[in-house]
Length: 502
Image 1 (cartoon, rainbow, N blue to C red):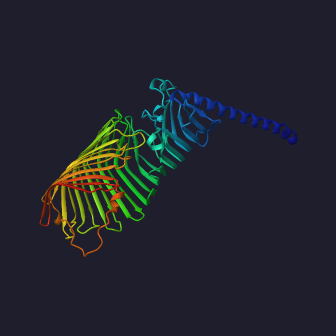
Image 2: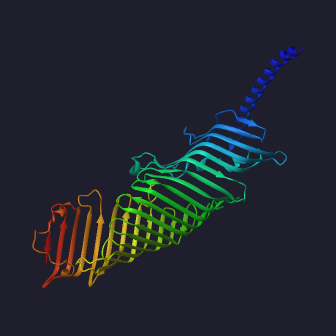
C-alpha cells in the first residue's frame, strides 16, 4: 500500500512542483510587466527590467529586480542597475507601501551636460500631470544602501579643451552609500565612500569618506555636521590629504535655492623638489539659486616649505557674489611672505575683482578684471645693503583666459621716484611680452651693487632669448656726478638693439 501511494504521489508532487515553478516564473514576468507599466509614466527615458522579478513573503515581503536600464531617445543608456532588492511593509487599507530597506548593487550612472548647459538627469522625470496619474498609492523609503556603484560626469564638447570631443570631467568608482532612514523630517545618519578621479590636466585621484546627517522635507533636503576626508594624488602632487566640514547645507528650497554655513577645509600635499604644501580656508555662508549666488566672508591661507625658504600667503574676501555668468569680489586683501631672501620678500594688496563668461568645460571665468587700490612690495634692496626696497603701486589687470591675453596698467613709487607702466601679453606673436614704462627721476647709483674687481664684461646674450619688447623713459637719470635728461632705452629680444636717446 505504501509503495502504491508513493508511486501515485511522487508524479503528483513533481507535477505540483513544476506547476508551482511555472506559476512563480509567470508571476515574476507579470510583476516585471506591471512594474514597467506602473513606473514608466513617471519617467521620460524608457525603463526596462531585464529579468523576471523575484518575490518573497517570508521572513518579510520583498522583491528583487535585476538588469534595470533607462534608455534615452537617442539610444544611449545613461543608467544601468545590476540589482535592486526591496524589503516591503504593505498597508493595503491605507494604500501605503513602506520600503523598509532598499539595497542597490552595481549602479552605472552617466551624467552628461549638453551644450545648452542642461544636464540629462534634469529631464528624466515626467511632467507632474503625467506623474500624478498613477494608482494613488503612497510610498516611503527607509534604509538605503548603495554598493559597487560608479558615476561618470561628462561635459559638453569644447574645441579648446578636447578638440571637439566630450570632456570626461569627473568619475566616481567603488561608490558605497548608506542612509539609515529616509523618512520625511527625520535626521538620518549617512556615510559615503568612493574613489574620485578627475582627468587631465588635474589628473586627480582621491579616496573619499563622507559622513553626516540627512533630513528630507517637503521643501527640500538638509545635511548637518558634514565631514569629508580624502587621501590621494594628482598631477605633480603626492600624499594629498583633504579634510572638509560644514555645519549645515540646505538644498532644493521652494525657489530652487541652496545655502551652506560654517564651511572649513584643509588640504596638505607633497610636491617633488618643493616640499610640503598646506592650504586651509573658511567660508561663513553661501546662499544662491540657479541664477544668482552670494558668499562671504572667505579666508584662505597657504603654507609651503621649499628648499629655498618658507612661503606663507593669506587671502580675505568680504563678499563674493555672482549673477548668471558674472561674478564679483569686493574688498579683497592679500598678504604674502617668502623667507628666501634677506630681508624677506613681502607683498600686501587690497583690490576688487570681477569676472564673466567662460567655457562649458572650465570652471574659471573667460574674462577677469583685477582693480588694485593699493599694493606694497618689500624686496631685498638691489644694492645688497641688507635693507628692504618698498615699491608701492595701484592699477588694473585684465585677462581673457580663453585666449590667454593679459593687459596691465600700473602707477606707483619707490623711494623718491614715481613710475607709470603698461604691459601686455599676446601669445602666438614673435614677441608676446610688451612693456612701456616711464620714471620721473632715478638715482641709479643708489641701486647698483658694490663695485667688483676688474673682470670680463657682463654677458648680455641671454637677452636674445627673451621674447620681450620694452621701452623705458626716464625724465632725469643720475649716476654719480652725471645727470641725463629725457633718456629713453629700448630693448627688443632677438637682436637686442639698445638705444639711448636724449
